[in-house]
Image 1: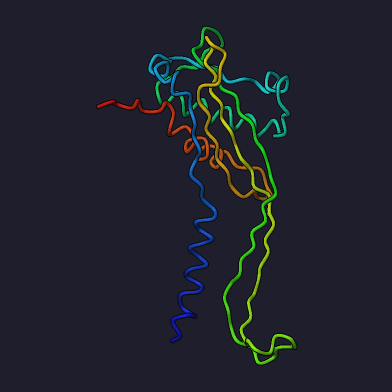
Image 2 (image 1 turned 60 degrees about the vertical axis):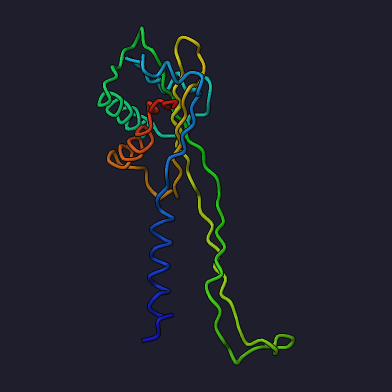
Length: 187
């Protein structure tokens, strides 16, 4: 069996699987890191509140799924959702962009070359894939200072349908797995 024929499909499957998953991108204010340990309660900005300072592009159904997923995840970490007297506020947003992937998938030989390419009988197949990539962003704002102290983002290729409750929960869990950040111990 030709090893090239065996490894090509295996390699492509690996690329497809790796291309579907993403690690969350997390950033936080190191100066505010000491506040994270004192946080006990939170509030999630409503759709109406978010519409006053950003474009709200998700459907109300998906918004409610996200709000429930964030609340479940933070309550599992020991935080309490309170409409007043909270330590931090949470807001979320999405962004999309068009991504173009260009892949040169191998070199072969062909006896059917035209002038001026007669000297080299190799050929390449170039595949162009253009798709929409969505980024989901969760921001945590300190209620006392009113400043952004933590941001998590997750990007993936968009599908044709709205994400299910389970898909939203998985994404939110992935992002909030790194909140609150573990304090860095100085030696």
